[in-house]
Amino acid sequence: MVISAKVEPDFDLVNVQSVGDSAQFNCLTTGTPAPRIIWEHNGEILETESELGIYFQHGGQTLVIESISLEWAGNLTCRAINEAGTDEFTTELEVFQLPYFVSQFNGSIRESWQIF
Image 1 (cartoon, rainbow, N blue to C red):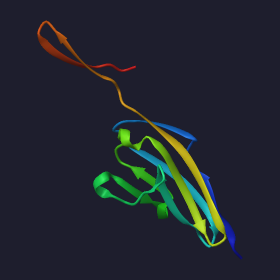
Image 2: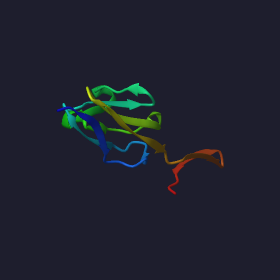
Image 3: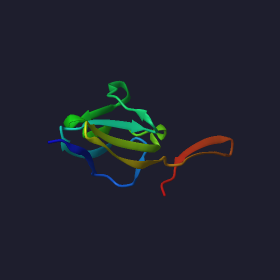
């Protein structure tokens, strides 16, 4: 018996992360035969890249990003594929960075962080 691939995401339609945070996205899949899992970022297929801090766990069902940067903003898609069909789920990843202010006061430069 062949059963079409099915994606059951364990994350929201919109995810909000801060620069420097780590993130984990779980994409539970079912189907017979077991589906192959592909992760994409803004339409580009992701592969494990230790120098970029990207890796997969649980047979590809979990995407781990060790340190979020502004470049991660956009769409993350989990796609499950088997011979009976394809299913996918896409989330929008919003990335925020705390504002950094540099001000000049009496001829000297003062740096400060402001948290909202």
